[in-house]
Image (cartoon, rainbow, N blue to C red; front, side, top):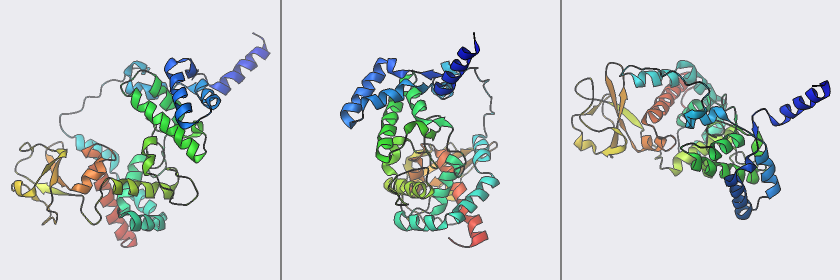
Amino acid sequence: MNLLKIWLIAIIISTVGINAKDYTKKKEVRAFITKIVKKYHFKREYLTKLFKNVEFQQKALGIFNPKYVKEPKKIKRYPKHGSWDRYEKIHLGDERVNRGVEYMREHRDIFHRAYKKYGVPPEYVTAIIGIESYYGKNVGKFPAFDTLTTLGFEKNRRSKYFRYELKNLLLLSKENKFDPKKVKSSFAGAIGLGQFMPSSYYYVVDFNKDGKRSMQTTADAIASISNYFKKNGWRKGEPVATQVKFKGNRFTARKTGYNRKYSRSSLKEITPMYGKWNYWKKVRLIKLDREKYDELWYGAKNFYVITRYNHSGYYAMAIHQLATKIRNRYWKKYGRF
């Protein structure tokens, strides 16, 4: 092979990528394009060009279809108990708390305006951004369009959902006039500081008044997370959760979880650990599995609202505890917000 041919091949590879795939060859992609053109008035030529050169996202696909994992991971055997100990260690370290305090201080004015409008305490919004993107340091390294195309049109358990999100990404790009190929996301297509899926942009607001709604902009992200909580039922001034006492080391007396509610009058054997808790509406029982015992909490309505962001009791508890640590440390260092 002469030098000219080698040079041309190198140019082609650098332009289209070694894993580039023409998705217009797939019948379902052509049908998808036709639907978007007819319903949302996109130009067919534009969409065809996007789908002709897609970087196949094997790593992302492997998470939803193990067939595409290059090397099967060795199963890590955890002990029977201690799942919360491990979760807490990952999400609630001192560095994350300290960064949260400084993030809240740096964007104090934006948080003030957002709290006034939506009623969600700044520390909870900060905690979301802290866990979702480490305060904007990790908003994702996957190309959003290529990732959602791969996940939407390759076999996996959630392909229909990812096609829906791909459609919403395209609509967003049209509305806000950006190139969908240049947006970075998580392995599942979540975008920006708060890691919103494209369909969740319904909640995103243009808080900095630049004419665009963007989760990659601090002001918009802070206000949008606040708006998300408010639209999902956040109650200003009400508590989120409190730790409670029960007899024994392991709690098995009642079913636990954020989807099950109890009146406090029916839980006489369970009492708040730190004095009276001034919340008498129905509560959730949230169990955290420690290595040597169970930790039990009451979760209020606002705790449930956090689970609308991520449907996990552990996630919501991590947000609550991180927010509490950030607030207390902020108050100690800078005074009340």
